[in-house]
Length: 452
Image 1 (tube, rainbow, N blue to C red):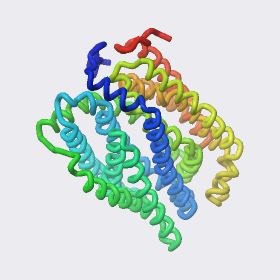
Image 2: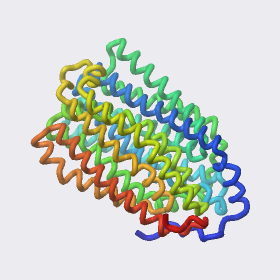
Image 3: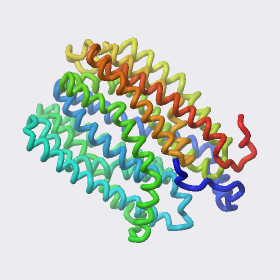
Image 4: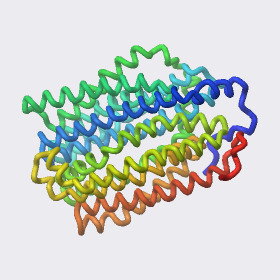
């Protein structure tokens, strides 16, 4: 792929940047505090998603959970697009663009990009709702599409606010946002369930309104952090697109690798198949708070290490992350695989889920592949090679889709889980290989740039 940005030349660091490095991340206490806060924040985010799915699954039935999962997958898609085109470029380049604009102007450009994406989302979801109405789709799906018109942009605003805090390494700010959304969202869902008024559509509205209320309050308090200038907005949008388009490809392929199964199962088996897969995936994703929390912490760490040209720090971050996650995630996968059926019965109290215990185990062991791939992905992005990360994800998707249809035809939901498991393993192998090769190509400025 063509270079998006030139590598920092050896010895090009200024004295001020070296001083900033020495007084910031070299402080182990500060780094540990940020990591702990990032993990706690992700537990709030993933816990909210997990408990929301459980509540909907218990009170709306397996088909209601299937419809809810389809709507949530659409929100995940647009949220991922915003991450790749707005949040990730802002995180990687907020220090590298200081010579061209102020931090407030850069933040204003990122906010403008998020607003444009939200407007596009409204247009696309409106077209979706109209198309479903014209083609005479079931009422439940049409009503969900109408709700998405308002709920998806509100979810984008929440995601922008928390990612902005993380990019500035203000993990406490992100934690406040996500904890507030957690309390408000779960409180409303439980209140509706207690009154017997909870439906998949109502649950979607709760997600949107909870995100909107908290995020608008955050934006009002932080409004002085954003300066909107037409020239800098154009510069930021152009720059972020050049970099983020590769991440966008990566994100779209990654989304399809997992969430495409929801739609494939809906077409081949029905909403009940989607609901069963979503229920099992929710349990298998219990390790996600740990993985995503570490990832949120690693993204700016790798970005700063690559900017300073420190190969030693990049390698150290990768090794420590991989080693620390290996035991915990593997142990979780083993327990989930062994007690999958019992966990489904405990959480959902519905015999319709009893046959899917093995699916939980397969999807849980899929998370083991995320251990070596997690830090590799963030390091590759920090070294300004997002296209190569996208290529690894695309290869994994091709592997998944090549075997998905025949496996689903013969083994149903279990076949879908096996296809995702194999595809993720292929992606992991390719991504780690790419990361290893890039270590020998980047212009490192420290003395440890020799291959180890």
